[in-house]
Image (cartoon, rainbow, N blue to C red; front, side, top):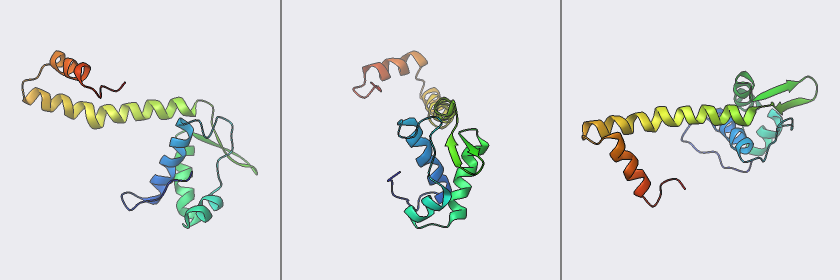
Length: 124
């Protein structure tokens, strides 16, 4: 968690996404303790309530689980939940609009697939 906070989006959302990113990168593993709200507040010079808001969103999604008196921990299956959520968001944010624009230009799905496969940055 050594990323820099920006002005682009709410701080609590950035805290949430940083923890998700650390889980996806296997920096934070299942059953591992995540930094406390006070640790996050000190690290990023933010209000502990702001850090808590990001942590609580992850708990509500089942990504983190609270162990009373010990702290918050990465839940079993957290990585899969994050991946599934981000794949859905990718589809909603990019693929739907890509298909709509392609349709308005008369590009078929087959042509789109060929474009992707022939590109140098085809994702692989």
